[in-house]
Image (cartoon, rainbow over all chains, first blue to last red):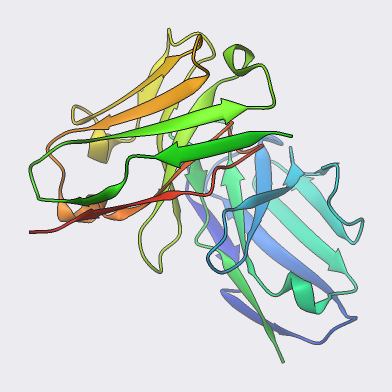
Length: 107
Length: 113
């Protein structure tokens, strides 16, 4: 199974700053890497698909990059509503797997 | 508007069975692969099972293989998950998802005596 390692586990942020979250795969997943946001007691929401493709309705401050084994989710100007857990997921090979998540908290 | 509405969860004893349903609307259900993803309390997301658009192909994570069955009825735009021989470690919120693009609200399954 492909193991996805997300770092950091927790990130303390200040509104307005630019941040980057990392997701590293144990083997190449090409660009079959997707990012989700999950707020408490809510379902996950797709933010970025295929590493860098934007999703309709998602604010433009969210962007993704990477290919192969190293991926990054960036938030350009964090807002309070972004305080959530962020998961990466690979769709290159079954079983599809998720990272353990990065929790964004207020500094 | 795409909607995925799960039902069928609740409390069940270890070793018993339960069937989850997911009613889909707002898109052509028969054109899309579907999946079930679960999340144990305070834990991360875990892919459980996947089914192709026409039901001809299915995939299960090892821990549920032989116990869970994913199926679909395209005429009813409904996805199912039949869960047999349930264990305490199956306790989780189960989400129906259009392969990550859209998600249901989730249904809680608690396996306990």
